[in-house]
Length: 396
Image (cartoon, rainbow, N blue to C red; front, side, top):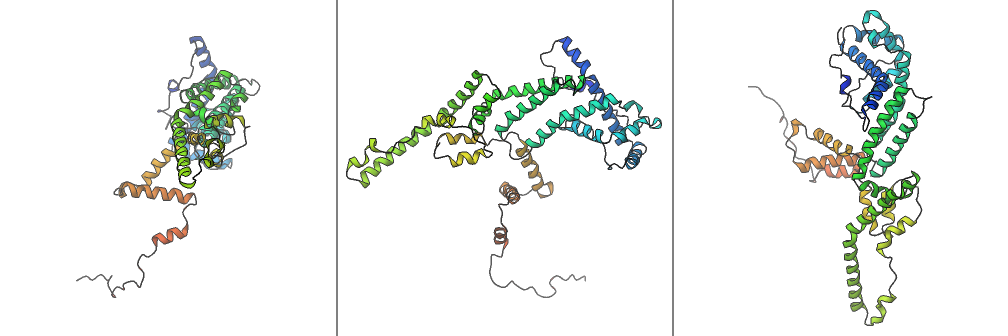
């Protein structure tokens, strides 16, 4: 049969996330998730067969879509190197179930081996519903706004959804619940990696919407909460203790200079009569003593309170760190568009300027009057007139 899916990924290519399982538990898990694997393999091979049979199956596919009045589309095929491709394939398959059933039921097309029974279609729908959260998470973190403070709440929400679904025997079949248990184990593996980087907890504590209340709300152990607070405190003193000393010395020097130059009476500038300044060492305690606020823009919140927290506000740089490398990867992709092979003599300054202008224009920061002034005539006065016939082509 043409396009029988010879290059299809075998089952042993699936990544194994059975961490910490005994051999018996691993075998039991393999048996439990087998219906899910079988369903995915059938859909994958069906998609491959239709796509690569340009003379038989593909024309029949389009005729079937017209019969059921479905939009003419090719069925996507899940691959291991493309994010959420399994969800896309399942979403398509559920919507186009009538057409898929019609083709796989036709004996002369030799697709009966890819036919899905009712139980397998149920598994396909359940798995699609579960994978929707990963699709949404991918799209969310692919934006330009998510930062480190969104990572832990997002992973907590995914973990909660997986735990709830895996413990819902009336909503999901045994095969899906077994697959969810494996997925939850994989998520926990990556969740634990946040413990190796202190910036996640620092960013959470310094967000006025979370502080330490987020950890208490999600029932973190008190020992973990104390550790998170100590991490923030250590980073604050380690990074800005010298800044505090420098600012204090500078303030004393300015006060002394003012006293000697503007006043002849030393009692006008007695240190004990000076305004009481807040101790910079208690900035973190003062910040944590205030209740959490419903703040969406933490950067603006800290900017508006930079005078109240002159040293602690320096740590806001950790809040604005991007959660993913999507932005950096897009810069590389855009750089290739600006600097293609046919225009490879641009220097780095011109390339950087073009990319910055492109980004600024999308943000509305480039005004038309500025562009007009840049590209306007630099020399005033009438233009030089060219003689008549200067562009004529004469063949002798």
